[in-house]
Length: 219
Length: 219
Image (cartoon, rainbow over all chains, first blue to last red; front, side):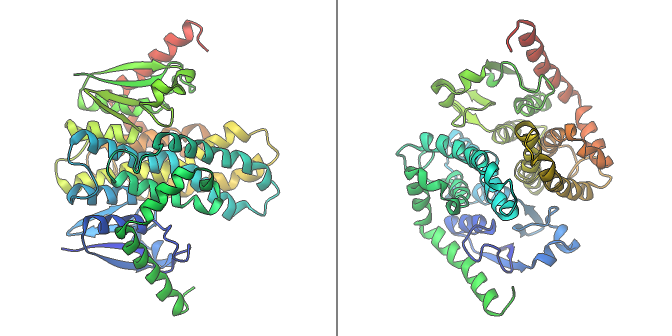
């Protein structure tokens, strides 16, 4: 049975691939599994029908044969555990790849989101400029540590894994701030992720949703 | 072979159990496995020896028989997958419990940490009071959604799981702000977690480290 995920009817990033369904689409493409997509509007996401699938009213969700999951990290891990292609076969290497998934989501992503939310919500406030150096300092701290750890390796721990999928996805969210450009090896790492055929297929699929939605005037 | 984790030599929370080694200690206690602890100072955490274990210079780490892991989420999941007591046996229920772990760490914890960091870093700034309502609004949004989802259930999805362990641990970090008090069912949920014998043993162990460290004058 093909799994169904949810995605924005009209993504607020205008198809840049930063919405969290992109991570799940990429995972499906890496393991070569088909998936269906059900689009939801912002209004629908806050209704009981969607909240029954996702307690926090977000996308993506995952439905398959009686199983409902939410949180992109959990969904990607579920896909990676069931299909070959995203986790090493050896147990210790597998556990390390999962460490990198959690590091992406709980250590690297929060300061990146804080930086982008400051821009979205507070850029017209008097304190925005005063706070920014500290906010960006927290992003730089994590990017610098990650850059040191990666060095000149292609991926974080041997072959490409779900840990890299999640870390590249998180780093993409910091591209707009210009901060990523300060770390050439991280830029190259992200570019390697974006160059993967599975990434490209997933990106095209989510962009097609935005383009179709925008063309019929849903804004 | 007994696993070794790292913890603060002198925890900045003064033994309140909010440091992330607490989550791992609690998991070990729930599954009835012994563990060793190696204490590290703030200076040691930034040295190459520790950075080789933890790329972001934090605690806890996990070492066992050639395997090194970091990120409390990944370590708790590793323990839960290897020993009975923290994940349901049935595959779908297991995947849902893991969803709750990710929800705790990637959806609920970030706004709670943002609130506490604003207090730590910005409480003397002119803008602190102006920003606070929005910052607290983001915490309330997640607590409200979680409260609605939990309802009058004891735990998030059937029996106590690693998802509850992580969610209770995250909610404990919001206790100091007073925001948790606005959600009586979440307070009761956290209290149920704290009442578990495994939680109490883990709490006592981390408190003993702080008490011993403080008594010899390491500050």
